[in-house]
Length: 80
Image (cartoon, rainbow, N blue to C red; front, side, top):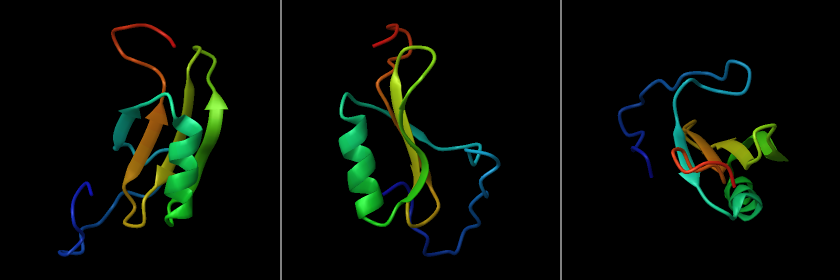
């Protein structure tokens, strides 16, 4: 859980493929996390893909509209 929605906070809408804010989770299990997130009711934004910069990534919105990106890129440590 990022934050509860008990106060009815407004979440930014997607503009293209991003809300402009969200979490980046570094993982080698991009495809698995994506499938689990969508299976739990998340919305597909970017299906698992190889990026031009050499990593793998995917993005979903959770059921409350929070943006989650799963990727193999490790900032500061180079490409994977």
